[in-house]
Length: 256
Image 1 (cartoon, rainbow, N blue to C red):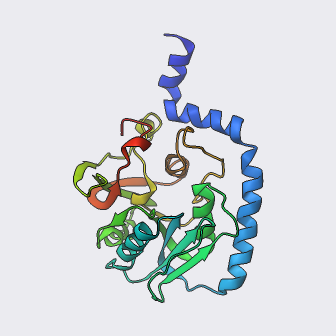
Image 2 (cartoon, rainbow, N blue to C red):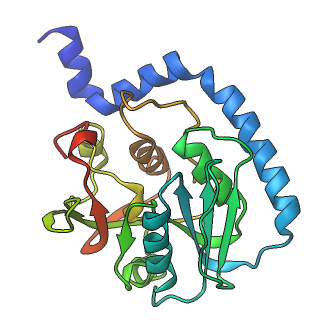
């Protein structure tokens, strides 16, 4: 066995790639952290105090008005009412959204094109026991939060759960259901983790990578968050398909 193959078998392909990303792209996080901090200060001053809720749902968006409206509608339609939905626009401008006291929508002063930073702003603008994530081209089933929180709030429950993804084609037809039990060693090798399905306990570890990840950079920030969080927190998989995940065939970077 050659040294590269031995390293891959020991540490996992994605873990090795992330180590490389930190070495090569670490410098990009400095300016992005400054931008994130500045945006949080500016937006927090304008919003004033936010209510503390059981769960905060963070929806990043950029130039997808119709998809955003569907995502917001599915978040507000959750059977769990004790939530705040925060939409964070990455500097493109917001479309008209429902007038709902549980919905807050803000825009960054300028585009940063880093999904992790946009989501971090949403996390930091909210106060909640748990945080959930939904992208502007996906939707939840009405019981997504209820199923996740039932497990999280149970005695001896985990710190985070992720449900199964019902993956759909652009024409709306079903493709398949992605349901993979959590195993950290398996996750080090395969990219099956997606934040649209994640509901996690708010701790200091719950923040996204600030590296500038272009489309060619793997792994994505979804994987990095859950893999790092699972180092010190318990993560479980719920096999219920509660996320309708829009598949763009041209965006695949792994067989998952």
